[in-house]
Length: 542
Ligand code: TNX
Image (cartoon, rainbow, N blue to C red; front, side):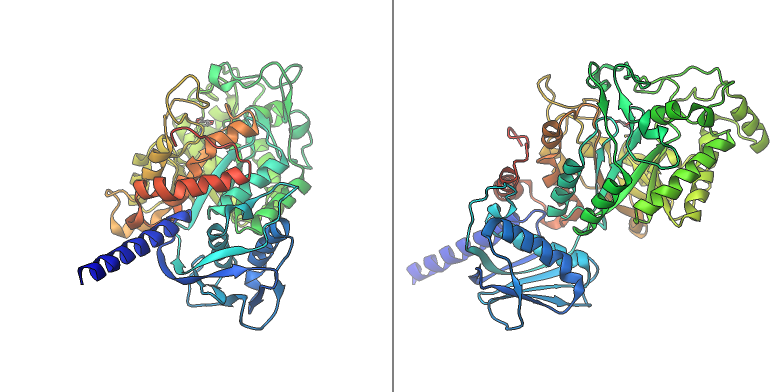
């Protein structure tokens, strides 16, 4: 009897350990996971069936990976054995999915494209990591085994964003695609594309060709200076240039959409705008303005003038082209870090202040964003901006969202006033910060260091937010600013593995969170998947 009890105990312990191990192998870990008996094996005779076009992107994605790494693809067939069954289930909410793996069939259920895509991502994470291989000469694996299990999963936040700054350092179209694909692999769904800043304008605008002829180049012999601030300056000695054509952008947006990733463009105004004001000074700065000021990053006179009519005409024309490229209903207009002495001696801003009874620089910015919001409304887009856009007098539509980046405090205050907030606190979610404080580490130090464990620990549903206001917490957002991310390798290093932990913050259930489990089971498996893709993640002390 004793022996039987022991055997039973052993069985349950190993059974639950297996379940735990597997559940935590999936990043982000699913909300509900049950291990079943046996396994399903994918071979070249496995096929799929579907009752909805909503599953198309997901099936294509799986097929492409199989084709590349197994040499075969799944054919459509309606016999129901040895089948992946994609089945519409309208009782599941958007993005929610069910995945049931049994020895003879795999059932993937959802009510949306995103739901089917995520079910497929989870399935792929349960396969050998080699499924993620992107090498040209792949050694083909023929059989792919999946553990029998049943999963019900739904995201914690609808907004799970990651930003790439392509202004400070330009990243190729190929890298931007890789970046988006890696996000999709971890169920992150908003790619925030920082397209303009002091150091570069990276989006082709047909009406204003100088934006890219002048504004997309910096370095020796160009109009664009380097910041005097030592850590911000980039490679001074060589020309740094690049921009995305409208065709590039359309291609990237379609690529993201096939992976259920929205693309949020950011045009950073009225500050952080040296590249644009150097391209069209006559339209954007008052020639009689004698002010001299520097931004926090020590860039001189880097703002557009909110007192000039031509500023708004110019921005309206830009937005008109932007909306033809980006179908996402939000546009990010920056709004951060306008130097306090900007426009001090601008006659047009003085006139504006008199006419509109504005008393200080903050109110001028409030006026500017009130007008910008009207322009976006005309184009059926909703404004997103850094937390500074909600200056006291700005009249913005209720649906406007701010990104709280300085710390959680201002974000929480806004949420409790019934304003929409995305949390992106620099102290936890700025991937341009060092992992650990050291002169040998890449990255800035001003808000860090932030190691992977610290990212994992972040939790925006602060006790200071009342239950009735929780709906105003739209989600979480991590940022890779690129003043120090001067190569793809450095960018990879700064993002990975922190983005693995971030996906748990964005998607995973708080109840299931356990750093110990994550570190012991998920991380090693997650790193294997990064390794297979030749991602230059940070190896030591994750
Ligand atoms: C602050 S966060 C900035 C960026 C810098 C970043 C460097 C924000 C809205 N503005 O312009 O790149 O710090 O960490």
